[in-house]
Image 1 (cartoon, helix red, strand yellow):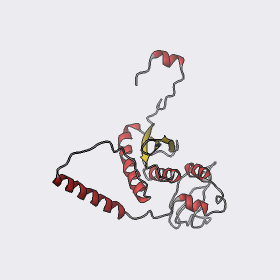
Image 2 (image 1 turned 135 degrees about the vertical axis):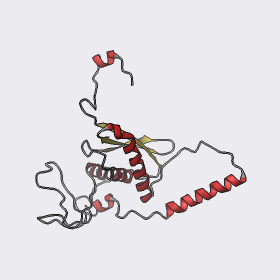
Image 3 (image 1 turned 180 degrees about the horizontal axis):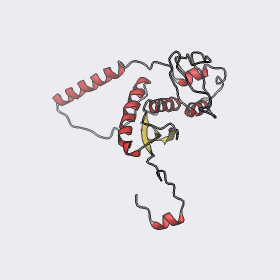
Image 4 (image 1 turned 180 degrees about the vertical axis):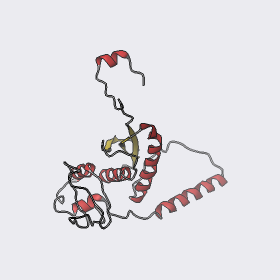
Length: 212
């Protein structure tokens, strides 16, 4: 990007990487018009927290950019350090997003403007590939836990939340799975945070929940 000197001297410039190698990656995601925006948000954030290279602070964010001709336009904002790893992290994120979208039957939208002229043999081969792909997607096991929205609505604190309020709540944090005896958080580590126990119980010495 070339910025004229006049812009640098007369306008405010935001520098994300001054004295730092940290940088933001924007990942565009286009889903089918019939997709549930709240579920898309949850699944994208779920994918983010599965990739250890993504920073938790600044927190990742899902942006609903608008309604496109072929689908709903989302963008996932994530931060990495160093930004030199951006290409590898973006590739890893694309694999995770595709995987979790299949788990929740969220369809990625695509344009259908391209066409190919195929002979009979080629057409049969293409049909075989498409059939095998469809069978593979149908055989994909369901997600091991119900959507976070459903679990939150099961708690009396959130049972009256509407779709917008639930999406805002989901964006505040992320789901974490802990085994018996694992520690969720040490005292004094977080000052402006809270934990919602979706399944399990808390003890004085640790956390016994299987899902939080």
